[in-house]
Length: 527
Image 1: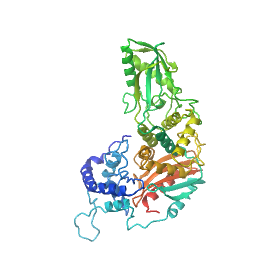
Image 2: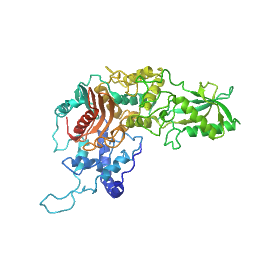
Image 3: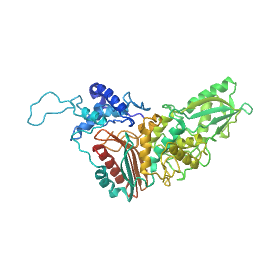
Image 4: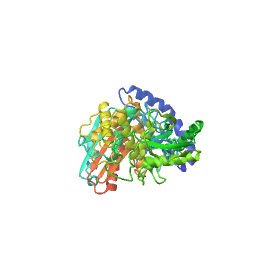
């Protein structure tokens, strides 16, 4: 997703160049070090908005100076709004902007009572690079994770049930667990499983196709849904498949055949079963159908809850008929049908690659995309493309990866169904699998995670402390609060974590308690 450039960035642009110059020699060091760490997973170093206060300065300034050398071993060139260093551009800009004085010295002032001297070099880069080689900074004693997490997870704001798991993503070793094998309602952290399953089934370059087909015998024009909820009728498609383009190309093809009047139908047979989610009609999700435009939203929103069309396929086909009319082709009022094998494809439009759709789904917690990707996973696995088949297909793909789904129970792809069950261990296993350098096709699972204080469902959280260091999928249902993702620690490691809680009376208090727990992980050199 695109985030507007912070205004302060313009004033500190020169300092960014200096930061990059400082880092460039270090980048090759990191790459060589990481290649030597076999069979460990590449270790991402995430950046954050720098704070010029407190003893934590060494770590936050390091994040800005290293320009977010994401997945330092060079295993990943992530899709999405990333610059050449592997860092989201908006995060880099904000981090540099908050540096204020910038430069290699980071604006350090002499201690009271001492004479002013030349600027001191930033003390951060050396420590972080050393940590990437496996050695914690000398001034930070390792703290047992049980001492750190047990009191935080005992917070009554989290309710009466909780489960947690923390693993080192470089080694896959579990560092902490409490109730980690107990299956609880995961809410939207289910989307991590959906993402891994879909990418495994289809690959990161797979695209969803919407097309038009003309039956040579009847002259019927069929709009064939390809299960792309991001298909848009807006004038600015913003990279999505455009219904307007499809109409223009279809009209052009019809005119070549000297056809200016058609019987219009639409085909949604890619999916099966009811399109109504078990929770019923809800602004968080449209009817699940293979044909819709703009997620069947009836307002101008692009994410979050919104009123929806009662029949998304019919609404999209009606809009398509109007667009054909704009290009000089008259269409009948559309009705449901099925394109036959004899029908000739006239035009088609395709979605962005699956890796991009996965990023959008995770960043914005997009329920419509989640259910669509679950159905496509079912189609790829030969399962019936309904809620039950999609759930079975997700579980099957996770087993294919060698992951234990003991205790897990899938009922949808979005996590809106309260009957879903996942364990904290499975969630951290999913994150470790996505970080495995042998599985680069899964990397968008990590790059799509919302970034603390910067993107998606975490943009309004982590206003202090771990901004930029935590990347996590949120999950919220009434009484259920979950968080699963990655965190860059004080000693330079990247951990995967999953916190599942239930029974909370105050969702805001529960979220804050989870954020404190993740922030503490970021701030400690834990073992």
